[in-house]
Image 1: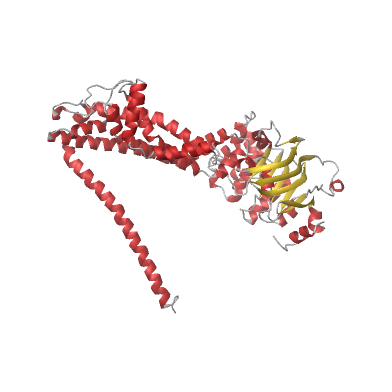
Image 2: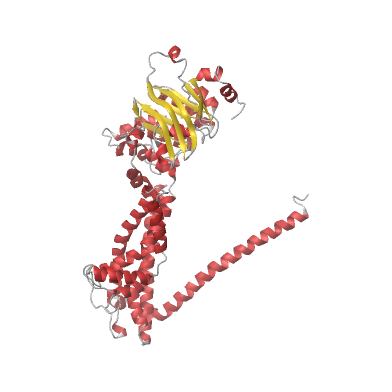
Length: 266
Length: 293
């Protein structure tokens, strides 16, 4: 079975900016012999938030991690199909996965700051990639973008581990932003956070949208409905439906999607 | 009103009793070890303390007990252990990093190396001595020098360092590695900047244990022919040498009672050096640990 779904309703929403950044072409991902993702095809559009939703174990995180080749570190994972990033296959010959990860950043489920100072957390990525501008400015800019600057500006050289969970997660977002990635992948970034921290991060995503392309995996349907422009619904490794978020949540085209978004399972 | 019925409370009482018995047993075992060590130290201290003075530490060995000292042995031991640390720590830690960070856990080569290292950790030290004699002293013509001793001793403690370092590296959470890798870091950059510093305290612990073992080892040094009577200080790694355990062994095997007391005094010095080394290493470890937090 090959599902090829293109997002609906894009033209009506915004005609100016519909550039495809990532193009997934019948992507399958296997853990030894088990297919975790089956023949998924869809587009990620520039400066939009795309949410991937679905019940636990549906393959949404696996799919997300394939977009910056983080699956390379999981033994026995193999992948079929093509993921085109700016027209180039991320898994093609001669593609350096290190370069892929530099251009496609990631924020993880649990905040994972380095056990170093706040400043060092931001500065390390740019430094190893030989950033040549002013590091102080970059640190300030990144922390401001992640709406963390006011809370930490007086203690940049304190350990990042002294921050609260929500602050740590915003620090991780700032750390990813400091690399000025073209795409930001987020793997359930709020699942370990309280509602107030979650709301702050959602506000932040709205602001980041004008400058970054964001793909977010979430098990929280309300969150997907609130923040995303496009939603992909996955189940058992299949992409069941992909389209405009409003449409997915109000007029789903598939029965399973409707059952999931109305909370009948999952 | 009772919270629990009589039957259950009897059961609960028995469980508490079992816990108490087990705790007491553990305490007994712990203290018997400490006690034994205490008796040993006391015995040595009584015998050797009278001989312990600056003259003893700053004199070369002599056939007259009252003029004999451990200058060459102390310097030899310090020299030897520094060389061992310089040789074995980089090699051991690099091996551990390679096995943990760069070899896939399923690879046959990795498994092969792993099994061999585990086996080497159990080989008697005298066997390392024979190996050192054959390879370093004879084949490589390094003679009965400090470097021969240091290389032999390094072989002996390498498995310990590798195993302890691997455990420390394994304990670094994967999320730290993923964080670094997702920023476009290479494996090496991730390892150098994050994995190694985070595992440093654990690695230090392993190194302390390994070097403590090396400082007290006698058999391999006898095997490769460290001298028992040395009236000069080694000037370089190619010089002949003696070490504290060798000096102790030499004095203990003499018939005169005075030399036995000298041996006891040398044991106190050896323990002192050991304590000093461990304390330094622990201070370094705690400093880095605090910096990580």
